[in-house]
Image (cartoon, rainbow, N blue to C red):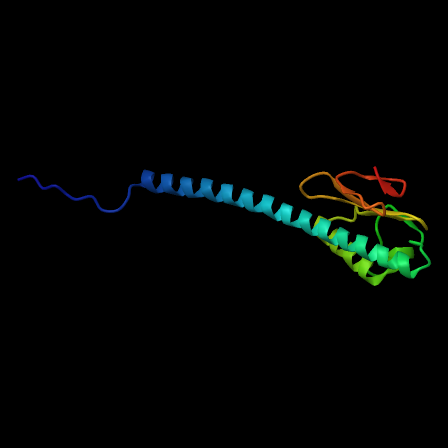
Length: 146
């Protein structure tokens, strides 16, 4: 008399294949999330730099048509700055840019008649804005975006 035993459970090979597939899928999802996170931080950098642009014009109008004077390899923190970079809202937006880009590599320049600001983007490149209304992926030359 032949007894056929019904198979119960999974073999070790089947379990390993399923675990490998789950591992591959999770690594793809995590890579996509990291790219999305970088794009979100880059959008935050650009938005905060736009805030600086608007506030700079308000500062200019309120201070005898001058942006004041500031030049440094790094932008002022939330507790320091000269010229337009002494404005509280501009300092807060600048601090938010530095927080989003994860570095202190943001550059700020202000002369009496012009200003510019650039920040590295996490997705690569550098974003620059200036008093001429330029907003583009480039660096600062003098007190304007190149």
